[in-house]
Length: 112
Image 1 (cartoon, rainbow, N blue to C red):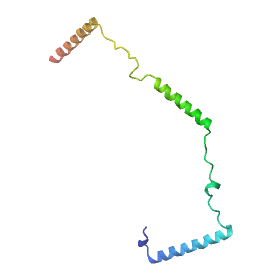
Image 2 (cartoon, rainbow, N blue to C red):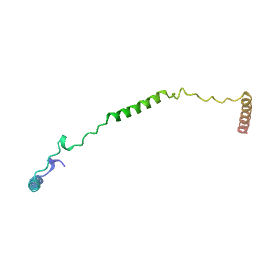
Image 3 (tube, rainbow, N blue to C red):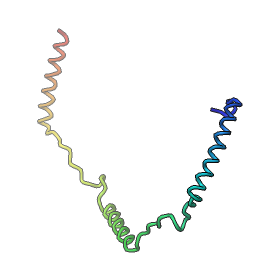
């Protein structure tokens, strides 16, 4: 809801509630004492984790080993492909004759 859409009585009521909230906040501060300030950089934050030089060296060596293994492995295009199976001329002729027979039967069945 936009503030320009509120009536005068609603605005007075909102101002009264805001004043009441401020008084209650002051009372709460008197009872509990001053609020503790947020921790500063040096005090409250956790120390940033650092890695030892030995750990970095181990990780570096492992990654170098992975890179070397990947470079030495043959690419998929360099691997030896299986030779395609080829039909013998006799098998081709037999298959061709069978298919001609099948298509001739289908053609004859269509004409009927």
